[in-house]
Image (cartoon, rainbow, N blue to C red; front, side, top):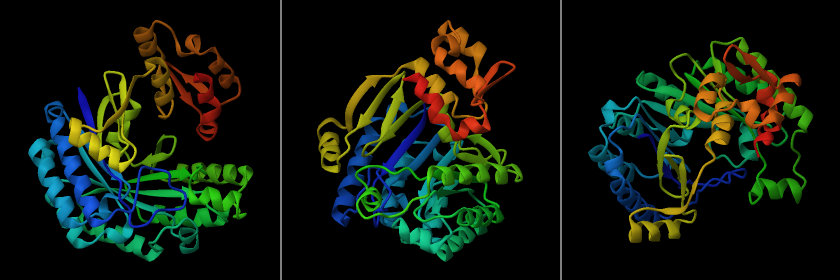
Length: 370
């Protein structure tokens, strides 16, 4: 039973230097062609969408396409899904795209949650990663959204940016906390190959914070958040009670979800499918097959249950795991036991969790699963 629908809109007005997501700067005609294909793929799956709880429109930058294109797609979506009945309907936006007209559009189609890609409130740091909005624009967008008193509001921040200092991070997080958002997602920058930033660092000598500096930043985030009303409920996510991302929790709880659009992934009955990753192949696939599927393979349910379950602060129920799989997580992966001694994992009652230190060094734990 599909509980979540992810809709990928890959277009951006510019490409950030660190980004390796499925995205592109598309002409108006290409955007129109893509959105027609997206509607066709949506209609192909319409019979599977009668139990939806959440929708998440991400990208790319969904807010970068025209109001008319977005209205046409949302009108089609409304015919397929009972939007007012959803538990959560999220859309991502860049600050410079948030206008009163755009807000009125998403209100009309019952969007309940907006995630704003702020990344930093420091204009120099924004420039260093190719962001085209300013801190002032971010604050104005947030003020405009808060005036509506309609949406649950989240912002994304990235730390360990080029030339960033701990003081820069403190200023960013203090600003974010002062805005009293409902939810914060705070990620460390991952330097991915085939990005402009990777070239700037490895070929042009752009300086990045050291591993030690990045760890200090992560520790400071944890200590600062602990003094706030936010709950650290997943490795990189913090929310007020009642404002955790329901859509993302579907992923982490191993519920079935459908992804449509360029490069989108789905997991249905423990089969993971991934759509075509180039826009021309995606459109051709939809026009030929009414879906964009490129690959399909079964997932290792035991591995996924541990990998995704440990991302959450609540961790994994040992009794549920034993009942479902006939063994404990430590029997299936004995290498996890050492992380109890090293302080990255802990047991409490029936559950296994990452510790706060484990959140920082989760990759050292997850490597035991592969």
